[in-house]
Length: 196
Image (cartoon, rainbow, N blue to C red; front, side):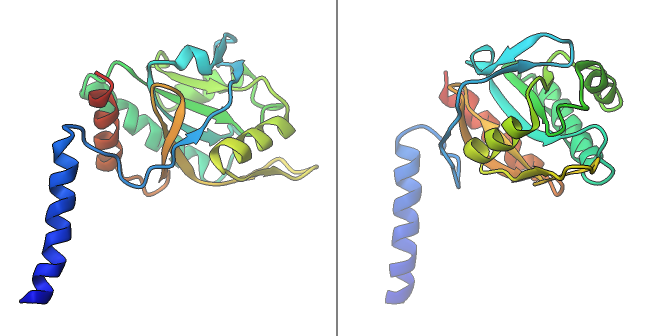
């Protein structure tokens, strides 16, 4: 019985402590700073970190010529988009960075996006940088692996998606293939609630 009390007391203490502040807390946070950027979206318009200030966003990395994971990852992002719209989360956007920018022009990205969603107003597909830049940008900011081998049309990359808060800090990462939808929506709600 004493052993059980030793286990239960810390759990109860943590629960009480977390509820005292009145703010729910996101578990397994990263809190990675995100450098400033300005790229080009699928409509040929500039879009950067400053444009996303005050928004919660989900980001991922894809390319249109991908013959493996990118179509299902993009379909999963489209499902998140539908859930965001259903829950009327107006301050949430999606951002997909192309990992093959020399192929993925705005026009190609716009056509690719149209295969997965009818609403591109809150989903930005970004390009307008060189290959070396996106590889370094992903590595330095998202701890995310990208590599395009010269002479090949496929790009090796990870399969995570990321939650970014209203100030532009990378808060958390999730599996983009086996997506924890409920967890993502819960974490988004916490960010939106705590920002009020």
